[in-house]
Length: 268
Image (cartoon, rainbow, N blue to C red; front, side, top):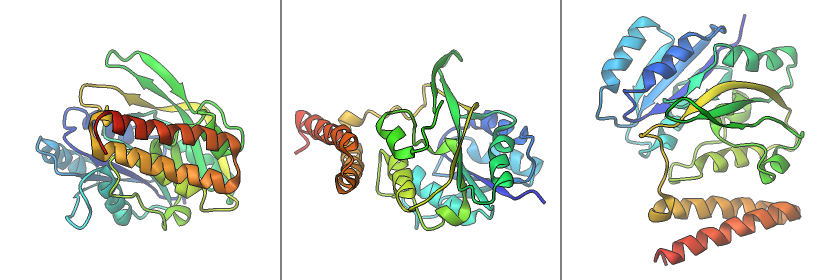
């Protein structure tokens, strides 16, 4: 039996884009998946679209984020995880596109070696014209934290397919307004003394830029700047404890720069 993979997608007012994402899920060559979509309080036609998809394919499961979880993608992700049942967890977003072999390619290392904990892949960014603007996660040195410091690996959640039993004690911080993915995956990767990570060089998904993208105006939003600083400080403190000189330099600069931005904009 092929193991169940849970795809967890938070969404908010993406009725004009989510169909493309869900169609890419339906086209997966790996068929034993469930897709948990959690709405974060949309005011558009998300409910109507989701009714169509849940009737079309019972592997889609649609929920509204309950009030006990804070508003925002973090609360929706945490609730989606609670509703999921898969052996493997794949976070995704409601405006991005999977290649048809997205799951198949990433599940293979788990099936080949039972001690695999994480599989991640390369991905691309495209602009509103569909033109590629970046390829990320093209390589892996074997040390995920060194690659983070060297800016060779992105800690965005969509690259990583995770074993459920490795991630079930780590939750998204629902108080954060920015840097929540760095916070989650940094805590994840530093929670284990030994973790087996497999890298796939192939581009397996596309991040689409559009007018509704979450292009945060962080410098003008104190809650986001405060979150940015909080996470950078957490990372810096870890590197200080580990005496990781390059990590200390990198994140000391980022902490100081965040404070500088807040001061410059009157956030005392």
